[in-house]
Length: 473
Image 1 (spheres, rainbow, N blue to C red):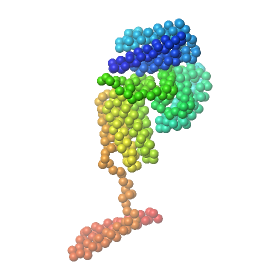
Image 2 (image 1 turned 90 degrees about the horizontal axis):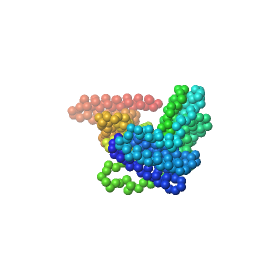
Image 3 (image 1 turned 45 degrees about the vertical axis):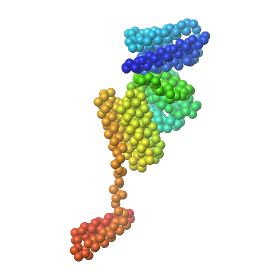
Image 4 (image 1 turned 120 degrees about the horizontal axis):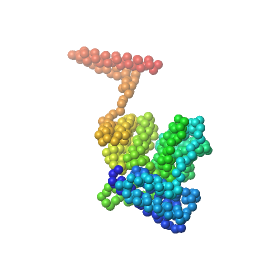
């Protein structure tokens, strides 16, 4: 991983540890909720930076703080000493992040054990093959419903029908014995229910953080469903469950705080490089590149859906053009933020091309919507490749397709039927040609060839008028 990212993580982790130390020192008993929040933030930052041992240790501290908040554990001198020791140990791990000792993983496990984290895995669901297959089918159905809901919510974030449908699916599942004990499944259905109810309570719009959570939950449920339908016991996918719990907490916390970041905070005095933290509700993709690929792919999915609607029918074109422009701008901003400047340049050009067609006729809107399919496919190829030569070729294809889509000399296709004479117009034109032919014959030196040509054209027009009249009758 680049050195700058390690430095960024070390600075951020030290800040979180300082705040946890302050939470422990506020009085006779700590601010457990603050301790839980900062431990969770440290764990998320460590996971994004591929520091698994630090994430494991921070997760153990988060578990203790969560137990304190819920009243499952009680504060005392012994627990204070254990937490203080754990934070000191984690700080040492952070300080040596550039060259970690080989026993870092064992030290993290020891921290978890000293804090009293349960080592035994959760109890499995009922050991009945038919029950597992039934439950797998139900989970597969819920995952499918989440996928269909995502399509609707990305297009219409205020639509409540998909959320109601998901609640109707979730609530019977919560009543099945053993569901909450399956790793990833319990956290997924709980997170979905809590987030949907919060959206309903606050009349909120479904945002990017919600969509990321829904996607993670769908994937986790689908993975477990596959194992259950095969008749197998679900594997230990604890990481997925913890990731979903993190996303849920981050989404709910962001919705509650709705903090404002002043634009002046995004400017720096020094020459750089500068790295800003990703939006808290969208953490958890595993790495910086994985997070960018996930979000850029989501933007391209939205672009393909919108341009498909625009290509099929120009009704509501103004709204579709506005949303397409916004989505390309969003893709461009993400690309530039994560160092994919050339991709951002193509996305900017595509957004400008769409915006320029806002007041264009219907045929022009449909034409550019069709051409953008090539551009979107080329950008997907860029994301799916890690080789620079392949990425350069993908960007070249994207730019060439944009050049064709925005060429100023492009004209609409004219249906051949529109070029044919109506019966009455054909007869009028035939008369005019006959008079013109007669003029060529009345002169001193008649032009027989020219007159014959005009009379043949007039005869053809009369035949066309007769055939058109017969077809109408």
